[in-house]
Length: 433
Ligand SMILES: CSCC[C@H](NC=O)C(=O)O
Ligand SMILES: [Zn+2]
Ligand SMILES: [Zn+2]
Image (cartoon, rainbow, N blue to C red):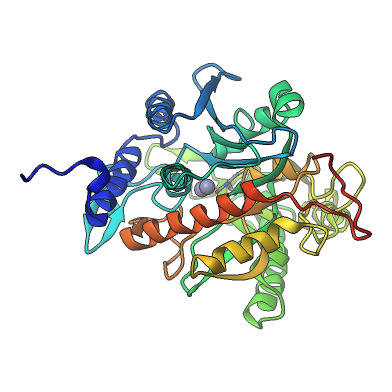
């Protein structure tokens, strides 16, 4: 007979099912500003049901469901593992893509879709790895949680931040380690992150006397703003030069990029051309490494970028703290005090992958909300030999890399969920087993 039982399906047809589930998730349009969170939550819940995972939907904020799944461990007293992923994606300019961003079409082995790298891949890879572990009979010693959170791309305030400060997180879940997103790697090494830069979104404003377009005079608003922009650009170049010279990795310098410029007196045909405006402003996306001195950067902003002496003011639209409440940089330990990094490395190796040196993530992720609470959090998205296309046009992930990533998580989750030897250096058990 041509009928084949599901359990006897060839590896290739089971791969096809895995890929088609990924496509299904990618086709749900969860782009801002109107993400379809409801459909994404339904999809995740249906996957959880097929895996017999416990599930609940947390409605911290109306219209923004956060799905929490649980795979109970044999020893519920051990700290649990949290596998986090965000369900939202950034918008796409449809007409600039070679393949529509929410059709998840496959071309030449590549799956094209917004979210294919950032980070629907990871969310579903966790689940596919659990599917494989379950069918192999694996039983976790530690409890494994999975959180599918909204709003990462707009700051995470109604998503991961709410979860991290919730009653359930702090009283019930007893999380000991968090895995969250990383970045693709164009080389054969996977990248791994132990911290991230803090976003400071700065707006500087200049004001000055208006004047005739023909008049040369000091302290015009635009003149003053341009002086600041020149100074900011010099600083930007000094930071970028260190990266170009190989003196510092990308995550360890301050980045400053101008993201808007606003000035001029509108007219029906554009702007009034013979009037120097009385106000001008510019916006900057600044990223501050946890290793930088935030006070000296703030001084630089107040004294050089927006000085009162040039009639300038400034305001932060976003200003994440670089230090924790003890004044220490918010970083996950990379030494032997943190067993999870070595476990990750070993697990990746076991699945025939290679891990690069731990880095600081250049942008922001939800991991910071967990690190702020003193928990170790590691950023990792298993995509090697892949160009970094997050937030770009034609974001894609190859089928093969996606499938390989599932093997990585199978190895990682089994290592993490089985890990019990938590001992201090003198051999005294730190936890009661
Ligand atoms: C202010 S939080 C912004 C978070 C966003 N994260 C991913 O791109 C980022 O811009 O890094
Ligand atoms: Zn992301
Ligand atoms: Zn993103």
